[in-house]
Image (cartoon, rainbow, N blue to C red):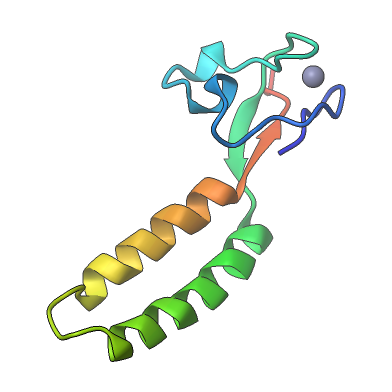
Length: 91
Ligand SMILES: [Zn+2]
């Protein structure tokens, strides 16, 4: 993802992004605070192919290795994580 202020690239696994405290999310380059918002377009772009892969994997894997609700949960979680977009905090 990219900083909304200086366009510095911020890693998805960086401390700035993974901080539990919304207020502590700051760009490591310019130090400005940002908030994370779900990018719905990107979310579906991730979720649909992932879901197809997950459903295919379910057909190939032995039964009960991974069940459908768990697989869908994983897909939704991963897609949401990679669809987060840093934006300027309002107000
Ligand atoms: Zn920045």
